Structures are given as C-alpha cells and as structure tokens.
Length: 636
Image (cartoon, rainbow, N blue to C red):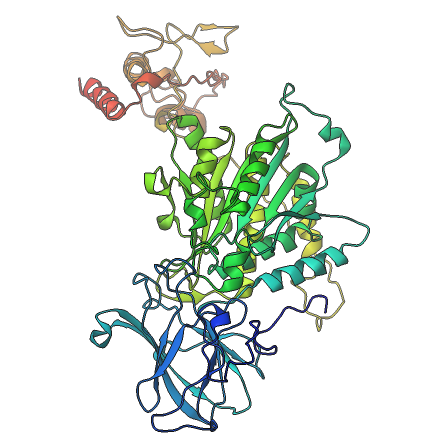
C-alpha cells in the first residue's frame, strides 16, 4: 500500500525459511540473524510454553546474532557483526514475543565493539510494542553500561524490562530505525502529493549490488533565463549536494534528511526562495544494502564507504562511483557551480549537533570555509561549538569531505554534519534533552535556514528590507497579545503632553573632539567662524591630543576672561556684572547709577577636529605605549 512502510512487528520474517528448518532454527537464510529462536529453560523440550521468549531479528534493519539464557531471567545477547567484516558491532534491532504477564527480564548485550559511546551519558535503548507503536526510551535507572569480568573484560550493556501484555510483540533498537522500505514509501508519498506543481524530480542514480535503488532527488525551480548563463560571465547556477546514510546504522541522519526534504518541498517562504535560486541534489541513502541488512557501518562487501571515496570502484562500490561521476560532471559544467557538499551522519559518542570541516593552505579559502558553521551555530540551539573540528588528517583521506576538498574546485565547501544519537545539553549545561524524531527534523530545517542566511551574508541574495520584516511580524502577531475574552471596546489613548526640554550642559574638555579657543584677539579663519589653532613650538598640525592640552592651558592663563565656558564668564552672563572690575569702578559692589547694558560678544563654538591615529601603530602593545607617552607629556 502506498505510504505504508513495512513494520517488523506486523509482517513475517523477510527471509524465507526452508521446509527443513524447524521453529528453533537459527535461520541460515537470515545472514546470521536469529529467526524465531525460542529460548527454553534447561531440561525442557517440546512445545514452547508462555514465558519461553522468542527472539527474532530476521527482518529489515534487524541485528541479533545469538541469545542465551544464563539465569532464571537473565539473557546474554550477541550482536551480529557486519557482513564480511567482524570489526563493527554496535547496532541492534530485534523483537521478543511469547512473553508472560508481568514477566521480568534482564538483557545483557555482551559483544559491543565500541567502548566509547553515550550509554553512560544518557543514551538508552528504545522500545515499542504492537499495541503501542510509538517508540519510547527506557529509563536511565534500568540501563547499565560497564566492563564485565565475566565476559573477558568486554563492555556490556544491560537493561531490565517488564513485559506487561502477553499478546504484544516487543521491539528493541539502538535508535529510531529508518529502513530502505520506509524511504521508498516516503518518496512515493511526496512524489504523488506534489501533483502538477513539480517541485522536485526523482530518478535512480544507480543500482546497488543487491539491485536496490540509490535515489537522487533534484529540487530545482531555477528559471530558464538563469540557465542561459555560462562560465565566462561568472554567473553560475549554484548547486548544493546533500548525501545521507553512508553508514547504515546512523538512522538519525535519515530523519535529518527527511526534515530537510520536507522543508524544501513545502510552502515556507524560505523554501520558495531557495528553490528559485539554487539547485539541490539530495541522495537520501547512499548505502541501501547495509541499511537493509542491519549492518553497523559497512556495505554488503564489508567496506566502510566513508573511507573509500578515493579508491571506490565501479564493481565493489557502485554507489560511490555514481555519486563521484555526478559531482565531477557538475564541477566541470559551464552552467553549474557546486557550493556545498554536506554529508549527514549520526554520532554515538558526543552530544548535540556539530560540523567537521577541512583546513586549507589558502587563508582566504579557509576563512570562507568557517562562515557556514558559525552561521549554523547561531541558528541551532543544540549546536555544540566545542565539538566542531577542522583538520586535514591523513586517516580521513577517504571521507567525503576530504575527497571533495582535494578533487573538486576551490569553490566547494565540504562538511560533515554530525547529530547525536542521544541528545543535547540545555542552556544550564547540566540537563540533557534527548532527541526524538521531531528534534531530528528540526535540525534539517535549521540546515535550510542557514543556507539562506549564508547566501545573504555573501551578497548572493538580497537582504530583506527592515520595514518589510516588521510588517510581516506585525501581521503575524497581530492578535498575539489579545485575549479572546477581552472586551472589544477601545479606549481613546490621550497624546502625551509636550514637556519643555533643554540641552544638558556639556564639558567640552572631557570629549575626545578638540576645541581650541581663539588666539590673538579672537581673529578667525573662514569669516570668523573657526578660530585659529595655536600650535606649540616644534609641533605639527597633526600632533593630536597632546598639543591640544598644551594650547588650551596656555590660552586660559593668557586670557582668562575670554573663555566663554569658564565659571566666571557664565556667572557674568547671569548677573550682568564683570568680576574683573565693576562698571562704576568699585570692586565687588554694584553701582547705584543707571548702567548701560553693553551686549556681550557671543563666541560661536569652533569646528571640531578629530585626532588622527596612525593605524600602523595599532599593533599589540603599541597603543598602550602611545597612551603612556601622552601622559608623560602632560606631566611635563
């Protein structure tokens, strides 16, 4: 049925057992996964009774190699390693049925190969049942991760559980599974939903070794006028390439990719701007065989695909060969220019989301490479800047970001976007908020918003006008602050009474702008507006604040009565008297005779000039030495 993904709790095993396989067979057709294995207590045989647990992992994305009863209610579970590669054992996904009401169990996963993980920092397994199909995390009190002496010093993941319904089938997984069938169903749904308004095109880039589709989505609304550009005009059509699920167990990366796809094909204004100006090439599942088989990291041939981009062949890794051909074709085109190659991954040892980048010998390219992670950090609250890393490690030479850095043009920015399988810390730095599917979708939407902000930052897209942004916000929040129960009667708002305002007094000598008093009887240049500046002997006109202090001190001592901002002058303006000598000749007393008021000359403040600082001296320590020299000159 269209849009309905295969659920391992509702369908039978994907591996067809032969007629000679019994119910207790471990299922050789399951590539090492247990297939309807019933665990009986020692000494019991015959038909299984209620409470004899039945384990099954022979379904899509399933992984459980062996189950043993080691106690009255304890089970040792062994993970199946990747096909053709026994090194990687971390992903698990299996079902349990034939349980008894209120049956208590303790599961021990005893052969985990990755000791550095988040099980000791908040990560817990997920569980759901046939009657409760929503995934839930187990409580931290029920999960333990430790080194066990009973298992040759290996790390063991133990979790306790109580089965509360006998008829239910329970499924346990490391993270939210995202299978190949679910991806195909999702693509079918959005392809049928878009109708006549084609917002994306879907094609099969290549077939995998097991004949599964490697889909390629092209989200493109660039007009025909923009397509007439060429490389000589340097007006390319910019392309953004997104890859996902190179490692089969990193299911959260598929949720991030789905959030990005839903946002880009949706009706959001940001999505419309991105579709009209850029071309998105999205490969949502690079390793479909590894995902289907339930591998942890490798493909069918047991190869880590994110370490083989530089040596991947057409026969062993056709997916990598096809993606590399697409990238080289776009990179050599006269119409297109690749701006981004973003590889989505999930991380099992660190919290939050973060970005891995490259380092370059070209300083300008390296500075341009740092812009996008910083913008993404400002848009995502769960971004962890401490985990961001830029390197040129030789051990990562086969990764996607290193391959794009070395084999493609200098304009390409290649990143690895990592998102945690557990969660992220809140602002307090102590509380961990665990991710769910909606949280992963939000990371994909933040990625699209950051792309828009990046192109506005480098002036490829115009910045929105402030008035338009305010009008949109005002229209969106028009009724945000009004309660429905509030009366509709509008009260008249009286205008605020006009109050007299006066300018505050300014101490000009405290400003860094230099004002000089008129010298030599008040003669000035430019028609008497700007007085001449007295210069100290041996000083230039650009000597700055030091000569200003000297000139001001000298002018005040020579002409104390001509400074209009001195306290004496201000007092004379208020009382109408001259403190230098009375009008009637008496010192300190008012004359009784009729005095004729002579209008005092009002000096206009001169034009300000700024001190000029030599920018070549603004090196480390030079500014401090310069200020010390000013103070030493003042003391002299």
